[in-house]
Image (cartoon, rainbow, N blue to C red; front, side, top):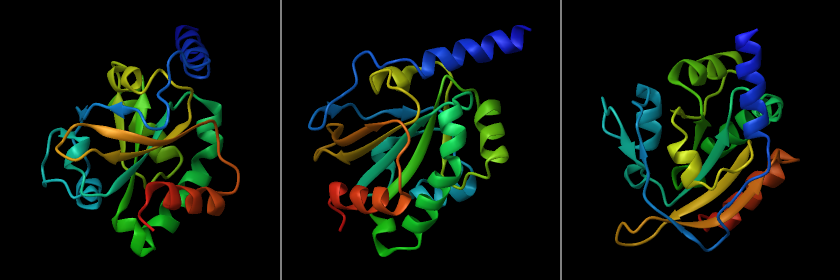
Amino acid sequence: MKQFAAALLALLLFCAPAMAKPKAGEILPDMEIKAAPLPAEAAYLGLPEGAKSFRLSQVKADALLVEIFSMYCPRCQASAKSVNAVFENLTARPEGKKLKMLGLGAGNSAFEVNAFRKQYQIPVPLFQDGDYALHKTFGNVYTPTYMVLKPVPGGKGFQVLHIQEGPFGNGEEFLENMLRISGVR
């Protein structure tokens, strides 16, 4: 019963309305991901092998497509197949070297993120945000939320180019829009 209550609370918290989401044009700080990427994730993101944590500014990309998800969010679960297809389509294109994807599990532990990754066969690099620190920086947004972030010159954070709360429709249209918005095309 306690597990059900915890899952229900997480569902209500992360599928609830956002309190102060950032708007396009706003600058977010450079954030530290306090999780070690898997070897394939480190290679994809251009991070040093064996890194125990990293900053978003260390990702070798011109722009980032970040998904904020929760393993307890039914919309995130239902969107997993579409997100996988977008990632696979992106990485098959030349623009995939400039626009990189990653996911942050709002309120999720490493165990929960790994369970989500395994159950839905997620190829996107996923990282835990068990203490909600990153989720708060992203404005306590709904899950799922997708943001396109572009590094600000001089290491002064990331400019929000786009924010979309909730699942996207057509994956091909979504990807084309993200490539255009990010400026990598």
